[in-house]
Length: 152
Length: 292
Ligand SMILES: Cc1cc2nc3c(=O)[nH]c(=O)nc-3n(C[C@H](O)[C@H](O)[C@H](O)COP(=O)(O)OP(=O)(O)OC[C@H]3O[C@@H](n4cnc5c(N)ncnc54)[C@H](O)[C@@H]3O)c2cc1C
Ligand code: FES
Ligand code: FES
Image (cartoon, rainbow over all chains, first blue to last red):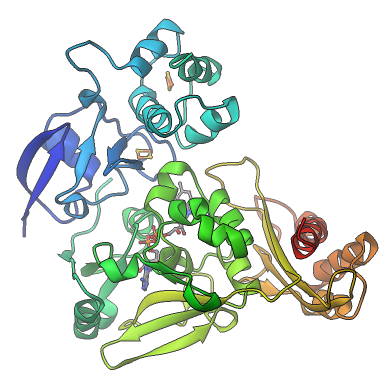
């Protein structure tokens, strides 16, 4: 039986009916069309499904949509505002830290969460903060440089 | 990857949760952070008909350090343990275990109760909890019981928790004066990795410069459950804490376990690493015991 849940996604309120066995990631992508959130491994290993839930980055493939009821979600679509792209997004572009782009939304959300708490992280702190986000293209170096450059 | 179908329950209190577990028994499973259970459900290793989420039960998210004792609610997250100053002050090895678990994304979801409930022989939190002499509180509709961590694991994926019970709290006393503990996990990479070998050690000294009064060593990944290293512990008691005796204890610990060959490493290598990690964790424990 479907359950009615309320989600605040990128500051907008949604009320939707979901099956208990749907993940938050699937609801975002297939029910709400927010395809910025990717699906890679679906097992918690790759981080391409990262969203920020109640202020903390998590794997949306491991969260049931019903467990996200009444929580606040930020997806990559929520980062751009009237001033344009988020500083992390800009830095990633400027530093050439995006190749195929599949890891980027998750990577950007993990980096944003880090910078919100710790505006001037060390390289070690950056590498640790993105350690749940796998990138098969860039070799990470440019991603680390991009995150480092945001508040420099 | 589709999850099997199930009914979802979200009790607001432990009492309510126990009632649901009593009603459904083996048909139900508790879900906390879901980082272990969701993966097993996706792989169709388990297909509970009823899923009981405990993550909205406020009383399970509390931590209490009053009275020289640590009480952690089962839904306290691994990220919060890693960052907790209160836990870091007296139970630092538990924080080391929490920092080593998964990735930041996993740690934000994963709970201490789930880490124990999953009963993986490679899990990061049990070794330190066991050397600190922790106990768990298991509640059901008709009452509650307290089980020592040493008696909690029954085998890979198997614990003392019965189908109608919920793990509500983990308790441990503050270590006595001149005590220290260390935890080290060895894997192929630092994040997102299953451990190859992990060890926690705990010692209490008679006083500064005194002999070792108590020693507890727990090894992971080298048996069906986490194991104590009895001959290593025995060898340490009554001895002066030195590098040499720590190395000897390492050799004894290697003899206390019988790991298997698997794709992660050979039995011989794992034994050798138990020796090294025992020695190093004793070194960390000693430093802490001396207040360094
Ligand atoms: C990518 C990835 C990396 C990981 N890396 C590590 C690692 O490095 N080290 C490590 O130790 N683990 C690791 N894990 C495993 C897992 O994240 C941890 O064991 C975590 O602590 C489980 O907690 P949870 O709250 O998510 O448990 P859940 O998945 O919710 O539950 C796990 C089990 O415990 C039972 N359970 C949970 N809470 C209770 C309760 N209160 N009462 C009774 N039963 C309960 C559930 O029924 C289930 O059987 C990893 C997992 C993933 C997906
Ligand atoms: S899709 Fe969620 S971690 Fe890979
Ligand atoms: S840019 Fe392709 S996976 Fe990271």
